[in-house]
Length: 209
Image (cartoon, rainbow, N blue to C red; front, side):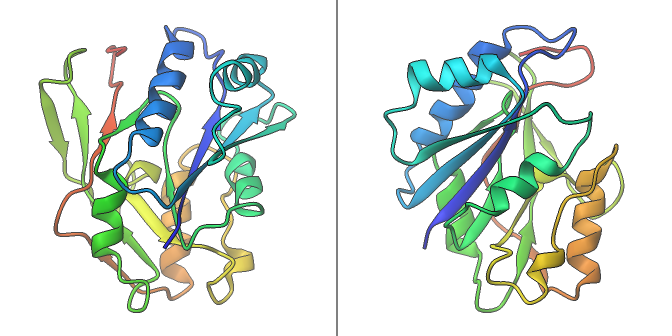
């Protein structure tokens, strides 16, 4: 069962440091997964830095694909919607370009996500409190505003879901939560995973890891 990981990438955000290194760290965390049947779809949001880093480091990886598009408005869902058109996976999950996933992240999701019973799942995630990743804080995620986002959801491919053509991200602040509500409103079956996957958020407040 293939898992498609979607990453929207724009590496010129004001006030954020070392985004080029973080991008490579994120992609490598995908490549280091113990689960083998996977693909990473990177949608470059008008970002020449993303395009260059991909061409220099990952263009020879058959399961990492780059889709360059013109720059989109802030908080646009278009990048992920475009990725929906080219994914080949049975399960879709997400990775921010400045975060990482532990080596068993996709395996843990696949082992608990029975796609014959459920359409999507959600789960808690981690936040790293230091650069060494030796201190991790568990973020308890619930389906409410300012709690749940793409770091905490996986779902079946829209290509296989009934009314999947309506399953698109909106544009605007909080579109992650709005997307979760859309999943719920379309009547899809879901559950919270018992065993926590290994998504690690690498930035919070004034921290910049």
